[in-house]
Length: 402
Image 1 (cartoon, rainbow, N blue to C red):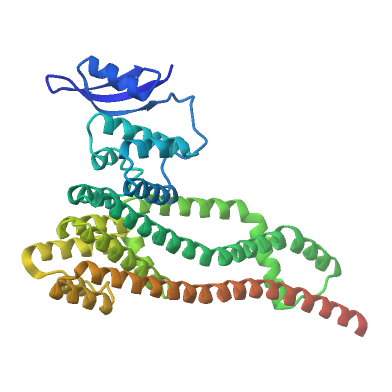
Image 2: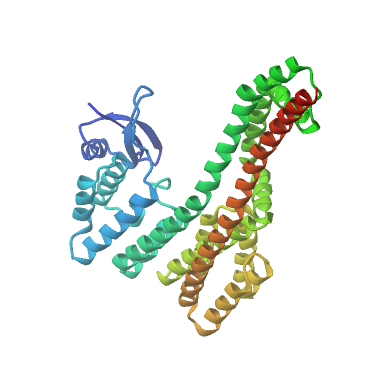
C-alpha cells in the first residue's frame, strides 16, 4: 500500500509529522482529518530504495503548456477542479501528474488555486505564484494564465537561442581538445622515436612540439587532477554568496558576452515586471519577485536598492538609471510610463524592444565565438603540421646533400 508523508496541525496548535498508509492521496487526507489533524503538507513517501526515472520537478515547457490549457478550460466555463483533473489524467509526465493531483486535493479541501500552487515552490517560480495571487483577487485568472504562458514561451525561446548559439563553438572546442589529446598521446611519441633514430638536428618548432607532447604524456594525470580540483573549487566558491557575486560581476565584465547577459537580464526583468503590474500586483511586491527571478547577484543588489528608493518616494526610473546596469532606453521608457500612468504598457514595449536587441546580441556573440574557436583549432593543427613537415624536410634535404 502506498505511503504518504504528512505535516499537520493538531487541535492544540502543535505541529506533527509522520507517514500514513492509504490507497490514494485523498484517502490519506480524509483519514488524517478523522484523526483531527489539519494537513498542511501531504506528499507521496518513498524509501531510499525507490526512485523515479522521470524528473521530480515540472519543466518550464510543461508549465507553459499547462498554463495555456488551463486558461482555455477556464475561458470555456469548465470548473477549475475538473480542468485540473483532466490535465492530470492526460499528462504523460509523472511530475506533472503528481503536482496536479496534489493541487486538486488542496482545492477539494478548500484552498485557493494560488494557495495550492504556493505549496510547490520548486515547481512554480516566485513570479508565477505572485501573479496568480493577484489574478484570483481581480477575477482575471484566464487572462493572466495566458500572459504567463506567453512569457514562459518567450523565456524558453530566449534560452533556446542562447544554447543554440553556443552549441557549435562548444562542439568545435571539444574537437580541438580531442585533437590535442590524440596527437600528444598516440601520434607525436612515434614521431619522436623516429626522429631520435635518425640522430638529426631538429628545427626549433619540432623540438618545442615534442617537448610539449612529452610533458603532456608524462604529467597528464596530474594535469587532469589539477583541472578537476580547480573546477571543483570554483563550483564550491560559486555556491557561496561572495563567490557567486564575484562570478556574476566577472560575467558581466567579459566583452560581448557581458553585454549579451545584461540585455537578457533586462529583458527578463521588464517582462516579469510588466506581467505582474498588468495583473494588478502592487509595484513593491512586483519589484521583489521580478528581482528574485533574475538570479544575478549584481542586478539583485542594485535592484534591492532601487526598491528601497522607490518606497521612499524616489520613483522607479531615476533609481534604475542610477544603477548604470540598465541601458538609457529602458529607464526612459519607465519614466514615460510613470509620468503617463502607463507603466505596464511601457514595460511591455521595453521588453519587446530588448527581446529584439537580445536576438541581435546573440547573433553577434555567435559571430565572435565561432571564428575564434576555429582559429584556435586551426592554429594548433597548423603548428603541428608545420613542425612535423619542417623536420621531415630538413632530414630529407640533409640525406640528399650527403
